[in-house]
Length: 276
Image (cartoon, rainbow, N blue to C red; front, side, top):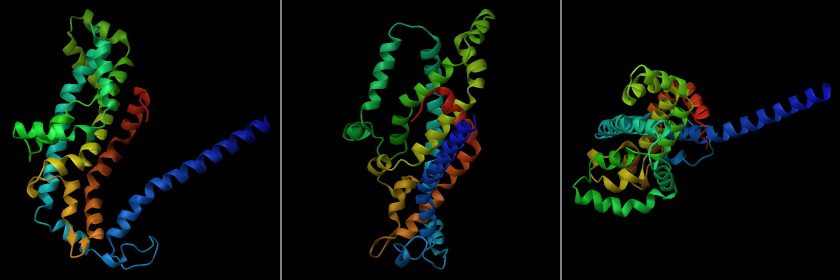
C-alpha cells in the first residue's frame, strides 16, 4: 500500500508539472503581446524580459483612431446577430436529430459531418462569386450567412440532448406537449452548459475571424476588428507595438465572456462527449 501511494503521488506530481509547463506555453504568447504593446517600435524585438519603460502612446493611438469604434461596433453586431440566428437554427435541428426518428436522418447527419473535412479556404472563390452575384460583398452579411449553420455546434447540441433522460420527453408527450413545446420548456432550460459552450465558441471564432472579412469586406468603415488591425501602419511598414495594443484591446470581450462562462463551458464539453 505505501508503494502504491508513493507511485500515485509521483504520478500526480508529474502530471501537475506537465500541466504547469503547458499552461506557461499557452500563456506566454498573450504575455508577450501585452508586454510589447507597452514598448516603442525600436524595442519591439528585444527579449521579452528585457527592462524597458512602459508607454501608453500605443493604446492612445489605437483608441484615438477614427474608425476604431466602428470596427468594434461592426464586430459586436456581427457576432450577436450570428449567435442569435445560429441558436434559432441549430437548437431545433439538434432536437430533431436527437429525438425525432425520421427517414434518412443518419444519412443527412453523415453528409453534414463530411462537410467538416472540407477546408473553408477551398470555398473562398465560389463564395466570393456568389456574394458578388447577390450584391452582399462589403457587408457584415458575408460573414453572418456562412456562419449560421455550423455542423460542429449541431453535433455538440445533439450529443447533449441525447444525454437528457428520455422519460422527461415521454412525460411531456403524455401531457399533450408537442415537439416545439418540449424543446422550449425542457431541453433548452436543461442545456445551459451546451448552449454556453456554443455561445463561447461562436463568439471566439467569429470575433477572431480574419480571412473572411479581409477578403469580402473592402471599406475601412465596414471592416471588423481583427483584420482592421492591419491599418495601424508606421512609416517603415507595420507598427508592431500599436498593432499588438489593438490586439490586446480586441481580446478584452473574449476574456470577459470566458470568465463568466468558464464553468458552463467545461460542463458542456465534458457532458457532450465532444473533445478536441
